[in-house]
Length: 278
Ligand code: ATP
Ligand code: MG
Image (cartoon, rainbow, N blue to C red; front, side, top):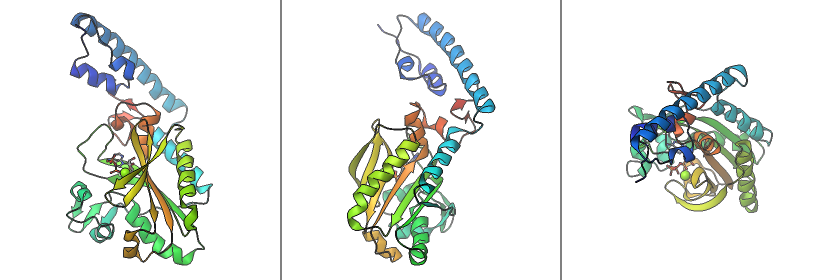
């Protein structure tokens, strides 16, 4: 009978970024398995220490920060203006996104005090800014934000309670150019993230009705939507638009083929994807 890793061994191997092939290995006996584990764990710890050394000597910024910079450069180079909006969100702005008590996302909100929560998405803030910018700037108006969002999740392999979203929006473009722009911006972001192999997949969304997901390795990395949209009325917006929200940690997880999304995000246990209890 083929013997697999114990649950504890498996978890440790995932922590140490062992890769799929190692995690799937099987053995003839428990003794053989345990011996292999000790050897592998030692090798992986040595590799992790080396990676930490490289971080310190060479690039000096974790991948999450470097990806954020690469995306900022790519988007500003393409005419997008970066914005920086509050993490604390008023309940009224959530309601304008139709996120009220009967909405599935409502249960995932972290309330800070009555009437204020940690933002679960960037869209309401961007909508708010755009109501002014559309008046002040020549169309089309292109903006983006990269920043933390918070959702109570049942912590799957692709979900964090605190994650980093990139949301880009272009408003006031010609109707017939929306598809082409969405595809172009998705390609721009995927290239900056080093992900060439991805697909655009049409899907239903709880907030936007219909969305187009950006999917790689079977994982949703982003969701795109288009307007005019029924939600626009809440903001007095009437022009056509396209927007995409991406998760940076998911992009890193897929690009790095990492077994755990926790290693890709803000963490006290990991630094630049390296588990620190080594
Ligand atoms: P899912 O269905 O996978 O939970 P979603 O459709 O609810 O995701 P969106 O609201 O479309 O997520 O958010 C845009 C992007 O933000 C997602 O495509 C994903 O990359 C990222 N994202 C959303 N929730 C999380 C999370 N809890 N942890 C990490 N990334 C997330
Ligand atoms: Mg989505």
